Image 1 (cartoon, rainbow, N blue to C red):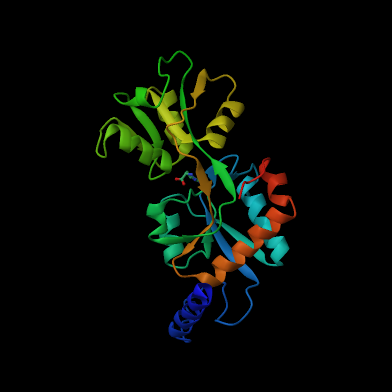
Image 2 (image 1 turned 180 degrees about the vertical axis):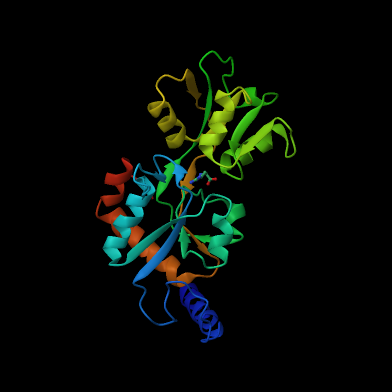
Length: 258
Ligand code: ARG
């Protein structure tokens, strides 16, 4: 019953939006079937979303979206927007949704809608091999770099203080790591897969990682403009399908618990 009430009010909201709104991107006017969606990303986050040597946007997240799109029979156009500009791009309709290793957080849910979670991650600390840092708490009076406005940055701000000058907030994760390598930071904090990929791609750089249970488990979701139920429901349908047919687990390399 509650569900019925919700869906009816969603319908009313959808109808109340005014039929003459032609500011939509690839999404056709209300009622028409969606055949194509534009997805925005920050393609600096290997192995999740990044540019290959041909300048093409690739990665695990891209594979996941392509897999669900195939199940839905829709086309996806990927746009490399960058991390900070990605959020307004979802708001102003430049993209229909964002796929960018985006962790579903309560704070972000106030301004955006998220699909069901499809990937699990956690923060990882990267330090020089000879560092004496052993835990997250050890970062308290150290200089720490992170990609700006990511969950890593937020965790670091919580520990060091919102306005701490010991925080080096970089535009991208590779830049945050460079700051650490160049000695401008004692440690760098970011999503596990990306930190591990850095080590894999840079075997000659003397670094190590530190795990800490202080970091909460994070769940990635696709992000849409608040109230865009058409796109949200479609994407959820696709996620459900690739969870059921095993495609998601095949791409991500692990089974997602319910
Ligand atoms: N999971 C983290 C967050 O949501 C980092 C995501 C960064 N993604 C990227 N493509 N740069 O804040």
